[in-house]
Image (cartoon, rainbow, N blue to C red):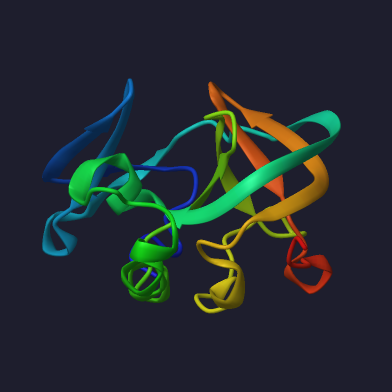
Length: 149
């Protein structure tokens, strides 16, 4: 992954801003990423907000946040699968418009194809809700995912 080994480090990078509904993402130019020597950011720990039940779909954050329209749903499944397999972070969009980043049981990113069969499919999750800074995350065990009927 592009940022592997850079957790809690300060970085300098270049990229394009992507916007959707008040959310912002940076599409990073991979060759621009540089870490600052001997300067570490304070680690932001996850805070548990308890168990939640959410219904929606897994999408790729790049397209959903503005690179593609519609960026979700079955018409976007193939593109989203390629984006997530290529390293674009997946996000969960609820049926009511809520948006969450996803982490695995170890609170780290998923292996690239761990969620493939659930992308753009209606699913209901019973998972732990986490918060780090201003961002909210769903802690998901891919082995426990099931399709909605």
